[in-house]
Length: 221
Image (tube, rainbow, N blue to C red; front, side):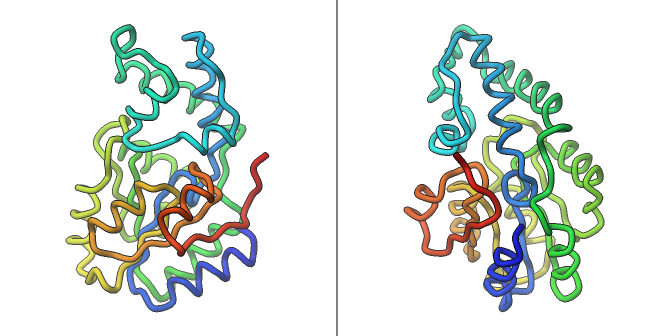
């Protein structure tokens, strides 16, 4: 993250006690990984490829709907097998392309000094645990909540469990994410939401949902 983005985040969360972070596209910059991985599948199925820009215009939750938008035929290839294949390719490409946004470790350390912070992710729990350890930020979170598979349907139920486990009221909690799903989950949990437009959905899409949108960490061509 740039210093200005850090400052905007710090200012936006100043009145909250519990900060819930999304992971992919919010703390880790992995849009290029997702684009490379999905393009492998698209080539295999002779479907049109996507750029980072077009990807951010169509990516959505549940991911099954997004796969349908891309043109995959679930009668020919099951959604589950496509997800399994995507995860394989994601893991191949992430080593060279995925990284934490600039300044994330320092930002997380600063927040941890005075607030509770957690992760709520649609990634599989095992992957979330492994990847946060890989980036050496695992210890900076009080709670890390993923889901029990890698089919990325919804994280709402896990969000309810996280709120209950935190023992911090909804009015003192804010979710920071990069997609409409984060916005919808926050609304269902009755908590505030801050959206960051440098991840898996475009600024235009996010600003159609909320006035609480910040950007500035990277540019997409």
